[in-house]
Image 1 (cartoon, rainbow, N blue to C red):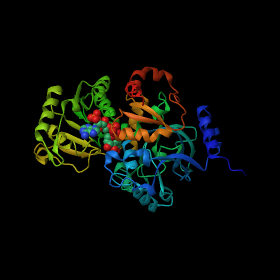
Image 2: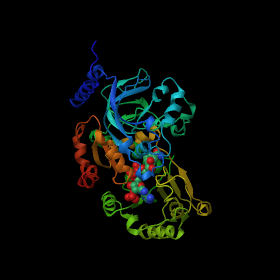
Image 3: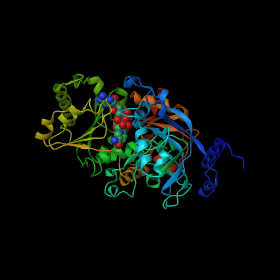
Image 4: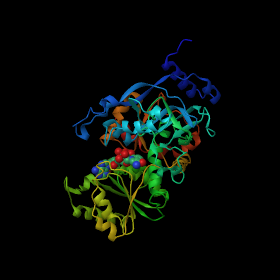
Length: 458
Ligand code: NDP
């Protein structure tokens, strides 16, 4: 038998999907032995030693390589990735901070025979995908070849008892494409069947591929009982309100009858969040907050200035602070939160060694709540809200696959708005819509984030 070239097999898969081939046909198409994927390489993980974070350039560390297609475990699905997105975790992987991710893969590799597939000298990154199921393992019941799907990134071993209350509390919970290999920034991806969700029919591939990670995270942080559980009429301070998680947070607060106070860093971003219906906006750059006098010393007067500004705008202190910048803002976040309120945090973009004045926390009975991604139920609900047109994707630009490192650099340098999509097998933007009527209903909201990034030439 003559081995065919992987490119021709991938092209045949892509063409069949674009032609709307039925699942039975997709199931019979030959699979390539290898495929193209965005990877970091284990032998380069020291390449940025001594380089300041800001200067670490993902264009040097992130490559598009051919990687071998792994065998499919019984509880897994092989998905042809039409589009994916850049999340901040891909920034972390590609600058090897706070730690290189290969140790995660080695640990997974020691767990089981199937886990061993992940321990490789390359790491395929990416924690979002929209695409089409090509194959399912023998234990998969709910999905079949031909299903259009989005993928959430909670990778859980369901034979572990600790995974059966809230799976985000499972001892072996991992983020697919960050703590596992074979992530979403590849022509193919291997995922557990319980990561699959139906693709919202009114969205293009690239719009459908940007939401699962950030939208689900914001849902858990604000809506779920596992997060801050926002109730109607509450005021929520949202840092980075035009960013990936922030722009979904704004939508959840507005949908839930709350009052968002959005913090951004430019007039354009202020305009974007206003266009979503947010009334109270703070441009932190224009107002010049300096919460740190120097690297070691915070300035409580600046916390007070922020608190005063929030009261001026919203008439009250925030019941919830949606926190993720970390070291730069946590002192202010704990201070401005109302008595009995909640600071819910999922990240520390500017540094994870946090300092705040604990007197404000304990004396005023505030709660500092850690939150991480979302369980399957939460991700499913967040996806359903998108599918029903109640929450909208916040994609500002879609990059061709071979420019993925450029997109990662933009996220690293805070130059993007909302989410950056990546076209993987989708040859162009605008494909994949199967419910044009619903799309027409929501076109303005879907396009809201597109214009500014397009003008920048992204
Ligand atoms: P983005 O880069 O899209 O947005 C982050 C926003 O933070 C920016 O838009 C910026 O807004 C704001 N920001 C940056 N620096 C500062 C600062 N010094 N002070 C105040 N605000 C600042 O990232 P995402 O929204 O996608 O993710 C945010 C963080 O959350 C990342 O660290 C990411 O890794 C993490 N995360 C964690 C998840 C989890 O499950 N634990 C899931 C998803 C994300 P502006 O400059 O306009 O103020």
